[in-house]
Image 1 (cartoon, helix red, strand yellow):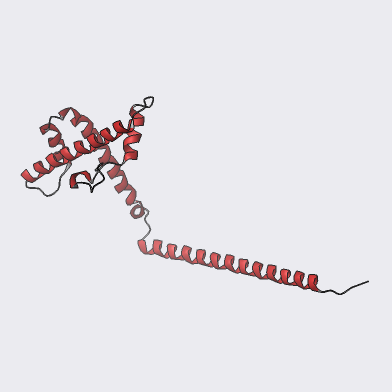
Image 2: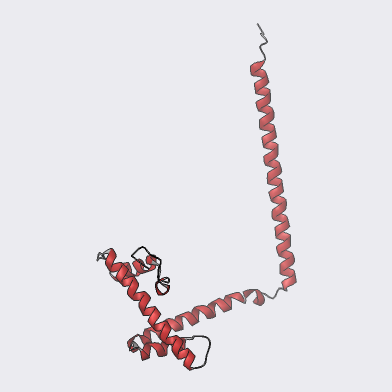
Length: 168
C-alpha cells in the first residue's frame, strides 16, 4: 500500500485484512493499546513475512520441478530462511487443516451413506418444492381475498359516509 497517494506498487497490492491483524493483536495483548502506526507496521511485517516464505517455497518448488507449492515446500522454506523454530507450530496447523478437510469429506458423503438412491432423493425434493409452491399460492390467494374484502368494506363505508339521507 502506498502512503504517498500514488498508485500502489505491484508487491504492495496484496496485504492481509486489517480486521484480522487487529483481532490477532487484541487476542495477543488484550490490555495493551497499540498505536495505528504500530498496527500498520505489524501488518507490513506480516505481509512481508508471508511474501518471503511464499517466494522461498516457490523456489524450492521450482527446484523440485513441481508446479504446485505444497506444505513440504513451505516447511523447507521455513528451515532454509532460518525460521525452523516455527516448523513445529506450522506442522501442527497443517495437521489441523488436514483433519478439517477429512471431516468435510466425510460430511459430503452423508447422502451416499443414507442408502436412498439419488433418484428417490430428487423425487422427494421435487415433491417438497411442489408442496411449498402450492402453500405459497394458497397464502397469496388468501391475501388477495383479504385485500378484496377490505376494499369492499372501505367502499361500502365510503358510500355510507357520502349518502346524505336524513332518517329523522
